[in-house]
Image (cartoon, rainbow, N blue to C red; front, side, top):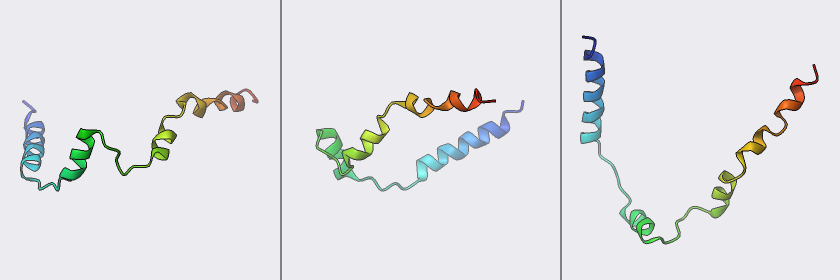
Length: 66
C-alpha cells in the first residue's frame, strides 16, 4: 500500500511527456550532428572549464584566524 500517490505522479509525468508540444529546432540538431560550429561563443565554455578547486583556494585562511 501507499503506492497511489507515486503512481499518480508517474501517470501525470507520462501524460505530460506524451501530449506536450515541443518546438524542435531541426536545423540546430542537424548542425550538432554534422559537427558544425554552433552559435554559442567559445568564451562561455572557457569559463566553465576553469579549475573548480580554485574556488576553494582561500577557504581555510579565514577559519584559522580565530
